[in-house]
Length: 220
Image (cartoon, rainbow, N blue to C red; front, side, top):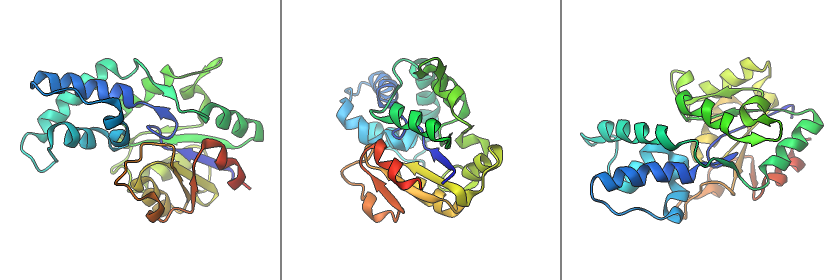
């Protein structure tokens, strides 16, 4: 494989602390108790929709969902660069990909208003994650985010790579669905934000990895 594309939250970067901090600030506004980190962790990959369901028990069908979502995102904007760190083993994996001459980039459902500054805030030696990645394609860059394939195909166009030459690595079922729809080999990262109720072995990914380093044996 010539190119590896990664999801961002829960695949490359641990953003659960900041996502949870924004949610707990919002919960406090409504007199609700804060949620523990281990409760937030497995839901973090599902973004504002999953976090609002966790904290308030609401879905997009509820009348107050959009207002709560806007409020949450505004709060997240004040804290989202406070503590983003690479997940364990990711720095070594990315270094090895660079050493092998394998292109790698990021395709996330996270809005661009957060993704750029967040990846710039993650330091990797002399450069940031943003500077080292071959591309950063965000959920609002296309007409539909994942599980639609459009952002993945945009990444291929941006870095002049065929989808059939790509691996897409993520920690959610929509990542597998998007990768397959784009014609890529798909990888589930079990080290990501996966809840006890998730069934990643049933997502029909081509590869399942327990650690970032496990990916290296699947690149040939």
